[in-house]
Length: 155
Image (cartoon, rainbow, N blue to C red; front, side, top):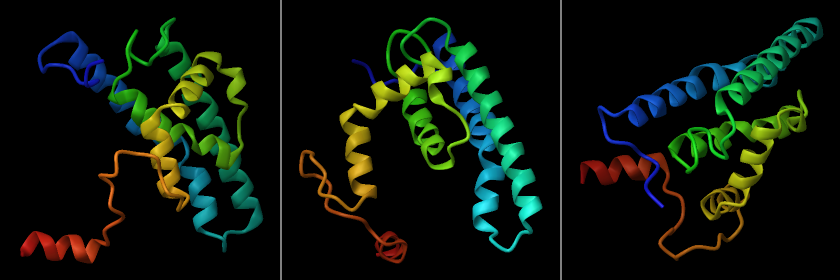
């Protein structure tokens, strides 16, 4: 298996960048109204409901577009996993939290989601987020606070 990256100047490189741009703008951005309602508890209920409806429409639209872009391949860009698939799972899991669509309505994306959820790296990341002891090589030695990282950079 390769790295999931492509050589600059190739068609695969261009397709990877196009997919990452879509994921970073349309797919990621579709969730913005939903996150906004959670981060601004003081909003009147009518505004929250309007933002939630807007977010739901955007998330559904982004999923429909991504489902169409995927064509009939197991991964976003073809027959092998790429960086785009890893980026996808980081965002797509928000559908569990916001519950504004049924992923089964998008069978290609549902399959991709399930395949990525079984990936050892994704399982490792989920364990870290949950505060569990992850299964890995032992190289991960814990989180580093920003202040400590900055101190190490200047040392």
